Structure formats: C-alpha cells, structure tokens
Image (cartoon, rainbow, N blue to C red; front, side):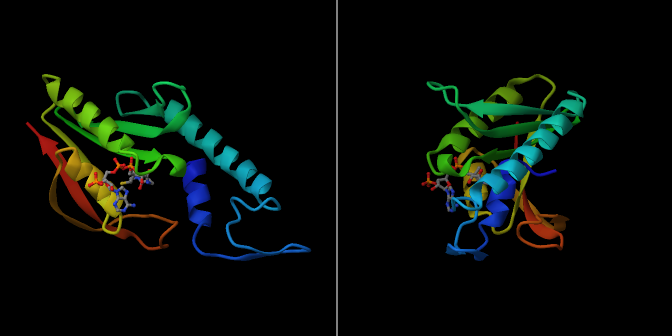
Length: 173
Ligand SMILES: CC(C)(COP(=O)(O)OP(=O)(O)OC[C@H]1O[C@@H](n2cnc3c(N)ncnc32)[C@H](O)[C@@H]1OP(=O)(O)O)[C@@H](O)C(=O)NCCC(=O)NCCS
C-alpha cells in the first residue's frame, strides 16, 4: 500500500488535466481546482498505510516517522525489517519539499551505525530501482556497497505496471 506522498508523486508524471473554466492544470497536486481532491485521496492512502504499519508485528517490521529536530514536523518515514536474527533491511521516503537537504543520508547513516552495533546484527540491506539515482547515492554515502542486480524484483506502479530491476545494496560488519 503506497503512502499519500507516493500517491502525489505518481500524479506528477507529466499528465495535463483540463479543468472546466480554468484550462489545463499542469500539476494536479498543486492546482487550486484539483488539489483538495488529491489531498482527500492522499489522506486515505496515509490512513491505510498507517493501519498496515500498526498491524504488522513489530518483530517483522517497524516503521518510524522522521520529524524535524527543531519543529517536530513530519518529513518522512523509515521502515526497518528483521529478515533473520542477524539480518535487517530497510526502506525510506521523504516528502518532496525535504529532498536534497542530506536528510536521508543522515537518517540512514545513524540507523546503520546503531543497527550494526547490536550484537546479533551483521548485515543491513536495501534495494532501489535502477533509475533511482537519489536513493542509490544515499545508500553509497551511508557506506552501503552495491552487490548486484535483482531482475524484475519490485513493482513500482508510478513507473510501470511491470516488475522493475533493482540494485541490491548492503553494509555488513
Ligand atoms: C531517495 C530520497 C530518500 C533521497 O533522500 P534525500 O534526503 O533527498 O537525499 P540526500 O539529500 O541525503 O542526498 C544524498 C546524495 O544523493 C544526491 N541526490 C539526492 N536525490 C537525488 C536525485 N533525485 N538525483 C540525483 N542525485 C540525488 C544528493 O545530491 C546527495 O549527493 P551529494 O551529497 O554528493 O550532493 C528522496 O528523494 C525520496 O524520498 N524519494 C522518494 C522515495 C524513494 O525513492 N525512496 C527510496 C526507495 S528505494
């Protein structure tokens, strides 16, 4: 289940929508005539996402909300999954207005250092779409090493209906 932020992002795909009496709306997530409807759906996705997070047993996956140190405003989410006693993997997302401020590099580096200090944990991994340059860069800056290509690994509905190739990354001790 995607988040509201992912839903908004999926709508920013270059589409143009004709709004009666207004003309073409380039970005339906920002246009005054369509923004409220988009937000209603985004809230629905967020509720469903939060419900799924809460329903998932904490020994399988925990989703943490990322907030600003000074303002406590939500910036994104970080999911940590226990795949085996010695092995974690993770996933992350930031709201678009918080991109490229080195936030996720800071979060991932801190979480990784903490995780690999736990006596039972030897590996933390992540995958990212082959075209997700930003995520790959975050992983590399956080000390993850690219291990290989997982072909047809994940569905990313905002890019394609078909499973996508992903890079596999990990940091180990
Ligand atoms: C991917 C994502 C988490 C990156 O977080 P971020 O906080 O913006 O990344 P940072 O600011 O820490 O950037 C780290 C490096 O990546 C680069 N980078 C970030 N986004 C980039 C992009 N879209 N294209 C190219 N480089 C990018 C930065 O310039 C920086 O490199 P530098 O320090 O050498 O300049 C964020 O764009 C996001 O939430 N995207 C949508 C969800 C997503 O893709 N999640 C990951 C799924 S695997």
